[in-house]
Amino acid sequence: MKQHITALIQAALDTLVQNGSLPADISPSIMVENTRDKSHGDLASNVAMTLAKPARRNPRDIATMIIEALPQSDMLTKTEIAGPGFINFFITSASATKVVEDILAQGTDFGRSKTAKEDKIQVEFVSANPTGPLHVGHGRGAAYGATVADILAADGYNVSREYYVNDAGRQMDILAVSVWLRYLEHCGESFTFPANGYKGQYVYDIALQAKQQHADQFHHSAEIVFTDLPLDEPEGGDKEKYIDALIVRCNELLGDKFKTLFDVGLEAIREDIRDDLSGFGVDYQEWFSERSLTSTGDVDQALARLEASGHLFEKEGNTWFKSTDFGDDKDRVVKRANGATTYFASDIAYHMNKFDRGFDKVINIWGADHHGYITRVKAAISALGYDANRLVVKLVQFAILYRGAERVQMSTRSGSFVTLRELRDEVGTDACRFFYVTRKADNHMDFDLELAKSQSKDNPVYYIQYAHARICSVMEKLANSEWQLDSQNGLQVLADSSDDDEKSILNQLAKYPETVHNAATNFEPHLIANYLKDLASAFHTYYNSNKMLVEDAKQRDSRLILSLAVKQVLANGLALLSVSAPQRM
Image (cartoon, rainbow, N blue to C red):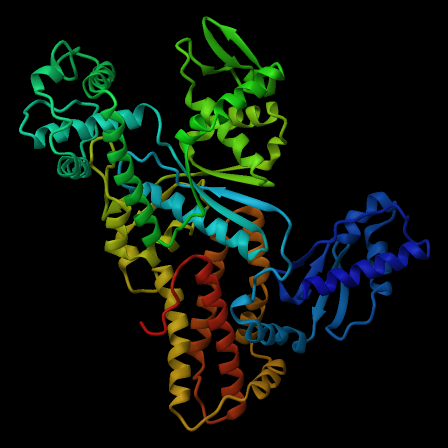
């Protein structure tokens, strides 16, 4: 209906330009919105006010001219001018019920874009270091990223989902050393585990796997391993220097075998993450290795491009990127004096790789603690010759888990955390996926375990699924009765209805395609979650006030046909959030 009214307004403006009532050089952006107060019509446009300045006319006068020039439409009962120049449109009852016909005809495609867009979009999300299992904090980024990708696809975009595997760098070395030390314990060695090592049970499990696969080939005595190392905490030493010294010792003692041990830890955790996310309904087209950027020469190529364009300089033996030329607060090291490139250098190469793969837009979903990283990455993108606006960064606050009133503390390093898998097992994937996207991603979120498990109207996902199941139950009872649903009769009766609850639901149903589009445009899946809560609430109110299977065929058919439309939209919206639409509860 919005598209129809937009077309009517555009036709009126074309007429007014042709007859000289409006200047030929106007190019208005026509906005048609739902009205909050239905006494002011069903839809409204402020186009007359946006034209006031360029046309040098009073907006109410322009509104009058537009109304007079509007083509005839059987879908409108009347138009009115309100306030400073709003144009209010009142649609016919038959037009209002057309949405039900559209929903039932289009089925699962209702709300999805009918036109494929040319833009190729990459969504990169989660990308947690493979140093341990995913915890509940990662779950929010996973749910948000996957849902954004699915909504963009529903809006017609060609979407690719990617996980950037940080399989290089110091944290991975610490993991490898942690696995090695637990492996040595499996070999019978005794020692104090380093304060800065990874301590979770999963490290024991990976170490046992290494022992089973590689026998004693990584074995060295504890005496050799720990001789002449600096002090650790809490013995008065520096835990960072201590763990770095252990990394050096591990490399010295294992030599080429260090990579084998490194890969045991990496592959075990990466596959656990892949399996965990798949069980969460999150799958990727690409798992991109950070290490590949070095082996393929992408890092060297990116730095060569920056050097050729004059954006690198040498200082104190290090190579720096002139990030301040692009608005950053300081310049950034990309290569150290010892020849080793920095993580930032890899990130520059990774984004070069993304754009060279032909993505028109790249969406990075990062934890909120990466806020300060945005400027330097965009600076590098600009320096490489790309439009930095092609990168969109969405920040996600970690969810905070509560058991009752007690906050659950989480730390991957200490091994004290609730994994995403444990959360799914406790409250279910549906509740996890829905709860994670009920708020804007950059807003603080407390995850209420007890609410997520409750079967009440206070639990939004349960309330929405219950509305869908209720309708399924009604249709099952209909199938076991002597009655048949006459869809055309139901549509005709619905069009003539003056029931406020039915009108409210019809209005809600008509908003669904726009809600999907707005959610995709703004990367805000919570818009769909909130929409589904409102639609479910409207239906429950309607259901509680009206018996569905009544003797009167007109009432029965109109209520059932409206219910079927609600059922389909609930299922479509839940599917976009990767939440099931159960037939029984």
